[in-house]
Length: 396
Image (cartoon, rainbow, N blue to C red; front, side, top):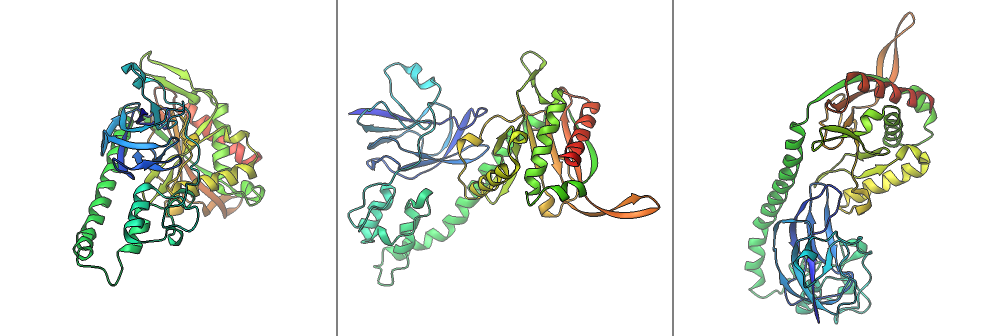
């Protein structure tokens, strides 16, 4: 039997550390392929660590707390098949330097597990949930799993065990402390999210930045968008505009004190969720078919709200789009998140008074605020990008 290290995964190109938030298994539990073993939180997203090997969890190195990418957070003892846990698990090696190796590609989607002894069919469940179900005589086939692909987790089983009317005395005192524990966990999670935001915004505060504003008329774009969401229309227009102002497709290299090209547009889309802000990245969205991109954007946003984001959307962005119009905000200033060189802030889209020949009329419009890293570009570059943005919307 080999000892296999569960390592802190590298979930995005800029990630240097992550925070172990919760373990779904305990020492001594049997881990099968597809089991969710723990949850890791980064400044971008929460991700569930899934096993791609089978064996016994023999050690949890970090129960909770911040760990550098590549460092072990736990150990599994099982057959070494040359696999590992993808980004999340790596094989042990006799040389310490192996811990610093670049993580391997992300693990595959979880597969269905064998049924628990109390189940009447193949039910996917984490080991602790299976053990809890056996202990309380719960048939896993009757449990609705809230994990990915219907995976049964511990809280799913606990919901069926707590309300038992003929429960013996022990469960009653156990239920009492559970009530105050929930808000405490919620507060702890909120504090962790705010700490992650604080780290990124502290970096932003060191960037000299300015914002330019422009009211953008949308009647022409509205007539042509043919049911495509405004998010997709504006995302494509911003990406296309960036190509016309290559200076703002650069990143400031602190080591060399120069602006370096960053490749084609890769736009981070800010998505507000009850769990905090998440920013999936869309690469070259302007080169996509609008209808296909619109379907993808909607699917990704839905996944983000469900707390599940494919790691392929955690790439390094060179621009960002933030829209608070849906919350009734007409105008706001977004902050640059390094190493991005610009961020486009969009308010609400509404009919507003505009000057027309001979008087005042109404037009569909939005106020755009473009914030730029002043080390990379100047006011003229920002004005050029907004003009290109408007032109794209008028002629797309």
